[in-house]
Length: 443
Ligand code: PMP
Image (cartoon, rainbow, N blue to C red; front, side):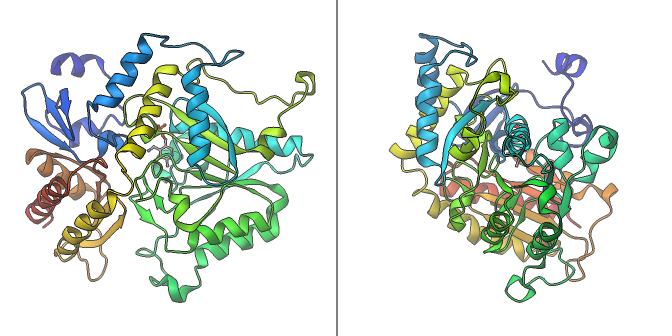
């Protein structure tokens, strides 16, 4: 399999094959929170298979839900037809979503969920008679996906730069990154200038702005930048004041990751749109959803000739197998009281992280629920980063892999996102490996 993979498979971010794993490990099976390679070696899945797995692998209830649905129908289109799991899931998502989100538009992955939100927002203002509202505001360092539209609103230069001629241009406002802020690292005294900047932009340009797209609480792919308390509610209020749509991208933060079902709940924020994917099926298969208010949905009603329809629809939209897995995922949340059970796991991680924060080359440790970013620094007192070619983050992760833990670097930020089902002792064991790997590697 290793040879075939090498010869035929084009992996995302090709260069990762060189620096993450030499040679490439081939995963053949999984059990609980462990992945098992073709040689029978077991690894903790410390990034939940790219932040998707929640209840562990081969979770009996989800396996069974998929098998049961296979006995009925694997797929039929949502264009002009309906299916039972998609309808049931939409009802349940609306029931648990922040107040006011009443309609569910399905798509296939996080990128398309955000793409859908951007296109909806764009068309919405045309239907409301404000066609000048065409631009988007996003955060510096934001990541919302890999399609041309979502790369456009993204703020990570590395992904943006090469595609520039293809992209539309958003207005970027500063990321709420206290550790790297040049003004102040204390949000209690800085007046949250990063949010104030949004107000300044909107005061001048709100007639051109369709919406703000934001990852609530945690900018994940930016290296786990975590906004200070109050920031999210503040930018939500400013968006409302200037009549732009507030699009919460909960692709990474949704489904319990932050300690609540959705990150918006931490600050009682009700967005106009919310995008979901990753954990929606418990990490089993691709599915995504863009939730909107009735106000937005109603703007698209009317006769086809009036061109009010939303111009978007995928072949696998509302796939019954994926929706059946998602329904089983939600059942597990309620039957196993998953959210309630997170407190002790989050606290156990926090205790271990305190020790890690004291290590010589650890600049900052950020934790929000079971989302952790450990930022490494050559000189932590003066915040001097390593040279990129030292690849310290990648080396720490490779060392962890040798010790049986899969984690990922984003630059020199070590990312840890274990499945929600990890036990306290598994979380402690994984963080022990991370501590050891940092001690051994970050010199
Ligand atoms: N939005 C956010 C916040 C994400 O973290 C990601 C994926 N890392 C995406 C969108 C894109 O999701 P996908 O990779 O499923 O297309």
